[in-house]
Image (cartoon, rainbow, N blue to C red; front, side, top):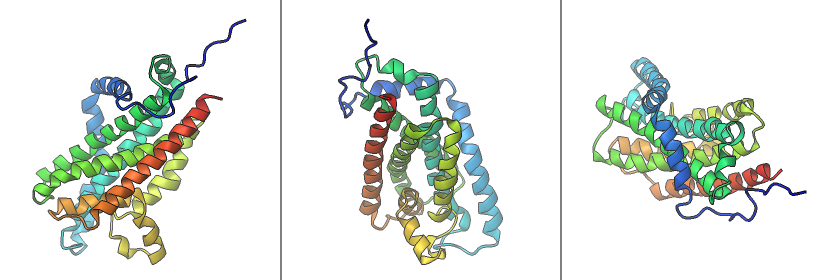
Length: 266
């Protein structure tokens, strides 16, 4: 009696330099068919928050860090939208391709390895977050809430933020038994992070211990890069924030790959 070959047997433990590109391209071609509704959907929620809170609360608040509250909130909205877009793609969409549609299983019967598949999902989720963040950036620029050409440097910051949250999301994706499991991630991690990372108000308004925790979170690193750039200023300690996001991505991706390999080898 013969046994079916394991498509993961003998695969490399790390992705090839561009081995992830076919996976990225496959996801892009599928997304392209519904690109406009997808972008509009990603725009609606953050813009509602920004306009409602920015102009509503902005009438009651003094300027924050020398800028109107709506401009302060705009930078936080860009980063929060980037986080959410990368997270949704790395959780719901990637889980569907892995567990429901069995797309990963089909890909793994090609010369591509699991590391290429997971890396492809990582870069695709970061790309989706770039689309979302750039779209909001375009809108707030049209509203006159940005200042100077340094805004263009916000795009690399958006990519770095998206990569970090895509990698973190892929960890949870590897652990999830079903879609319902993702609600714990949002309730216990994403929502609290949004509240203590400087999206809606300066972190110095928090108790000292909580502000210290918030300052180390990946969303806070993204906000610390994007907010000054939108105001036409060079971020303080930019290299530290960049390295923190890169380190988060590298460590989280390694964990996600290990957990995914263990899951699929069961």
